[in-house]
Image (cartoon, rainbow, N blue to C red; front, side, top):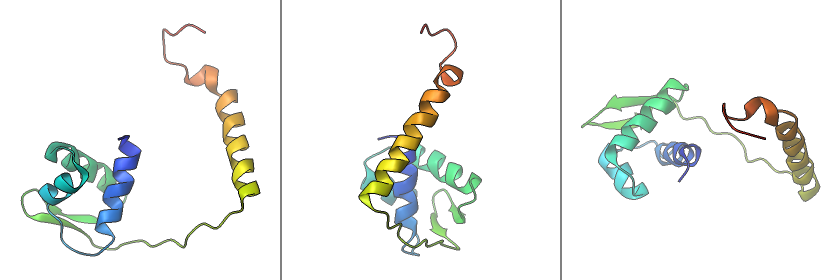
Length: 101
């Protein structure tokens, strides 16, 4: 599972407003406890209001709820095209050092 997906899933766990231990989240997501701790630190560093400590538990102190994004299939296709164009225009700048075209 990609880190971005894990961070999203962890954020979703905390949206219920309950206290969660690292062990509970690790078991639920089938990843290591150490990974959970790193990801929680990453979320907190990004401004997500998670409070708590290792061994005790964590809770989201001020959950943010955004309304669902309702877009049409045509709008989604336009967004995908735009992302592809942006990615293509910056491909040479984002290529890893030492890679050959």
